[in-house]
Image (cartoon, rainbow, N blue to C red; front, side, top):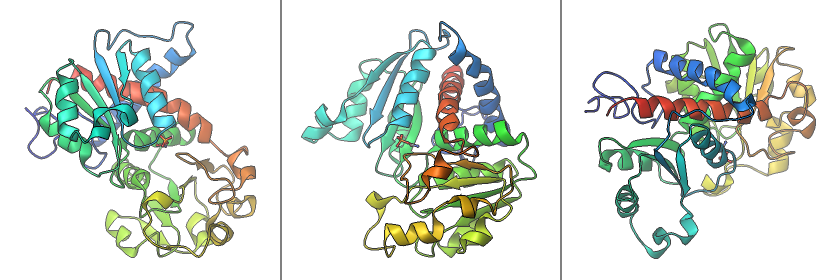
Length: 320
Ligand code: CP
């Protein structure tokens, strides 16, 4: 039985699906980060496997493009000894008009134990979670502009790895926040973990004032936004989600909000630079910064494997 208030928790408050960071207890986030820490060493072993999901079938359903999330979920599931099935959406029956729920029902009939779902429609993983059998778990791998919880969690793992403690930090999230599911998941996680200053930085068209309702400081001036920051999270312009011209040009955006070495010098000297990827060099970030000593963009990807192992092993261990 699920919690009436939060469909991703069971009646005991344990995680059974991962749909969103919003509403997760702080202790659950720390449990995931601590578990991920214990899995990091598995990646360094000669035999990179533990048997926690042996005999389980994990179905990767990516209805939208992905490089990092899809691949690291597959690696994570295999390192947990699961059988992994990657559905080729372009060649599946959804291309012939089959509904999402009919596809799920058919895959469930093949004894799926877990669905990892990326979908362009916000809420699609919630819909699936409402319709699967009680023993089946659902992980949101990014839904529309709503949420990307495992990205948010791996971002928190990265921040904790480099900064140790959340409670004295200033974190600037910069760029196309209005279309970004990563920004939303990061902001919820930073708030839950007690970060005292979270800034949303970008032009008015991409960072609307009502973001203040999420407890962030909205900055339309880049210098103000990143000054003395401990962590800078750069975001890609989500052109595929923009309707109409929201910016004069990519070049103009880079001049004002692109992270260059000169702008980075305004942050704390030991500030880290993060980006969920894919990065657009010369649009939101200068190559010198993306490849520089303060960039932790590639470690984020590595941590993502351990964080996804943690999420899958925790939810699979809890009864719905
Ligand atoms: N960060 C992220 O979601 O990247 P992909 O789109 O490559 O999965």
